[in-house]
Length: 348
Image (cartoon, rainbow, N blue to C red; front, side):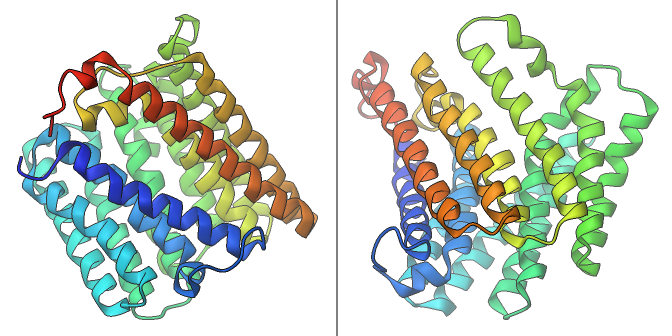
């Protein structure tokens, strides 16, 4: 691969830092450094970082040209949007998402018996739909619901192949097949209750059969991953309640993006980052520190939204940034100081 490996990571993580800084500016924690970044904080995080890291990991693992191009397009779109070149940013994101759809369709055609293939295609279509809504100025509910459906269905889709080896009940299989319909209806009808149903159906389909949960008694990284996945599923359950019963927009979004997605990213980081860098997975018990801090910041974020406490809202943002900073420091220090990495500087 001419452009791959470690070179896919810096643009993605720069988007992460831009998104976090923009969020801090919105909360008044730091001065506004770029108005376009502040206005498009969510899109930069969603497309530049989350979509970027997803395709970067798979591009380097599968050596797929469609995903490699997409992994360049997503963070590039984030840079362009922050620079105020909106049209070029939207084009980059459309291009990357279309390539993601093409890869997902090929994957499904090749592995028809795998549950994950169907969910990858469905999620990639929702991602593309979200960009359409965002680029053409639709109400925020349309593109936010699309992107929520994308990331939740993709993450759960990755875990969905467990159904093929765990002998699930008919109810679990039915929930798996019906869940995309609930998400599609939720996006089209802008129904938060339908999105809550989507979350519950995925929990019913996946959480009971996820083999990673059973690794809790194993030491080291296995236990860390198990705790992370259990915690993320718990947040998805909380999100179902929040989306069904409240109208707090900030609370609804961050139970998903901080609680569920953030926790999943931290739990899988010790294998995702090394997969891109082509080294053995790293793990240190110190990772429990940022993991715990993230959970605390998410709880504070939800409390601040429910009780409309702007002071707690700002503190939650600061604590989230601290959690991410500690995690990134631990991840990269363990990675770049590893003998495996230092002995293979030409890995790409």
